[in-house]
Amino acid sequence: MALTRRTFLTAATAAATLGLAAPARAEDAFDAARLRWTGMIAGGAFDPGDPDFAAKVAAVDSAAASLRASMSPDPARPSLWPGLPLDDPRTGNFSRAYSQVRGMALGWATPGTRMHGDAAFAADVVSALDFLYEHAYNERLERQNSNWFWWEIGVPRSLTDTCALLYEDIPAGRLDVWFGPLLRWCPDADHRISNATITETGANRTNKAMAVAMRGVLTRDATAIELARDGISDKLGGGRWSLLKLTEGPRDGFYRDGSFIQHEFYPYTGAYGTDHLDGVARLITLYAGSPWDIADPDVVNVFDIVDRSFIPVIYDGLMMDMVRGRQISVQGWRDTDAGQKALEGILILLEGAPRAYAERWRPVIKGWVTRNTVHPFLARAGLPAVRQAKAILNDAAVPTGPRTEGTYVFADMDRVVHRRPTWAYAISMCSERIGAAEGINLENLHGWYTGDGMTRAAGPDGRRARPVGRLGRRLRHPRSHPLRRTPTQHLGGTHGSRTQPPRAARRHDGRPRRPAHRRRPGPGRRRPSGGPHRLRLDGDLPQLLRPPAARQDPPHLRRRHRRAPLLGVRHRPQHLPRPGLGPA
Image 1: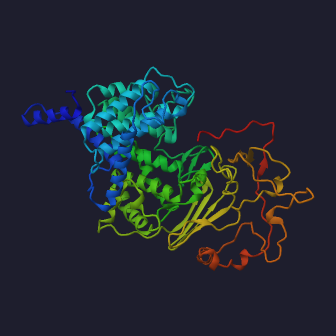
Image 2: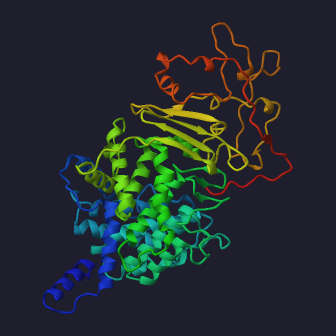
Image 3: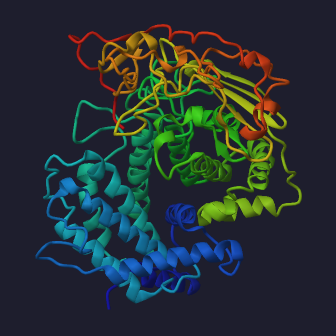
């Protein structure tokens, strides 16, 4: 019978009972770190019979069982699943296959599933990892112009998570084999192996740090764990790309006023910022209380950004669209999903947060979850987040916090939020530092004016923060109709959209029609207003938040006025090169 870690741990326990040498304290630290990590993936200890957990356990069970039933290894093709041939790495199927194996391991490790702890199911997962190592991801294979992300982040993250979940039933010696390619493609968190000129930053550095740290935990390699910890603080680069330090600009990252910039010009607190928070929170929790605890004094900045960057832009558990960048156009990823992910990151960070922060966040979280009745958090979140949220909801000592109030000016990303007890009002702007909108990867291609003074409001009954200003309408800039050039430049910075507003419709005689905001209103029609609105924030918002059928615009919104031109927007001369927009 093959020696597995489960039999080894059983023997070690028996040896300790008989009075033999006990394992070293460092060995206990490796196991404790691994259990903390699997708890953040599979949910830790919970009651599978609880209705809030039962449906999620059933979903994990069904997904894992379906993956096992459809798995059909074919060395000749090669493929592990019929729909994912592995012969061409440019398809990314090998990364998807590793992700599906992780789904199987999650089913095996989740209490309450049919395959939980099943030795035969674990053997199938092990054989799947052997197959993928042989045919899809090993030290001998080359990237062949496929996406670097799959080789250096996608597979390492899925593989280390799978091995952490299945750890007790992995045969001895298999980890060293499977992790061989990781030493080539993801040896540390600092460097891009596929391009030696690139130093990893932001979410990429976070993901690599997680992969390197877990490789060290699973192989009991303290050097790898310390290497990942140093990568978090960027000790190799003198702290320039530290995940814990606030940036002074102009570059990506969190700023002291709570702003978050990604791709040099764009506010992304509710997208890339959420990914950053989630990854760093997991790393802080992994290292907390271990011999390799993070001693960097800048770690306090991570706790501060929850108060400065996230709480002001989350309304009853929904993330405001003004900080979601091009993700506002992604189907299936709405403000509820972005808010849920941010809340899950805060819950993870709560595990390792100082007491003062934890006592301040728990009432806020309880208020978000309690008031979000349209898209209940417990019905949408994963098992770990549900377990943590229920602990807060069931704690009578934690009060239900009210909505956040105040005026928040995020000067470094040109965003303003004004919050009152029953409503919130947000303004999206742009400047010589901040682009109006980003449109890449076929996403947000019609978001031209979402940063040109667009206003949004949220009401007391969970209604979404919807546009109330007219600057966000699909209107063509009046000075751009004769030409259609791409890209544009905004006050010296990149204007993100790679597509231009549509041309004005032409009249029957071929002459261009006036833009919509400059046409004379016909009988019974109102002229669409497009200029900056001077709203009295203490009186106008409740009126604007009523359903459209029951609302009448205040008199000052009905005035006829010309739309203010977008100052500083100009076409980029054709002889200049296209500006780079950075990775997606």
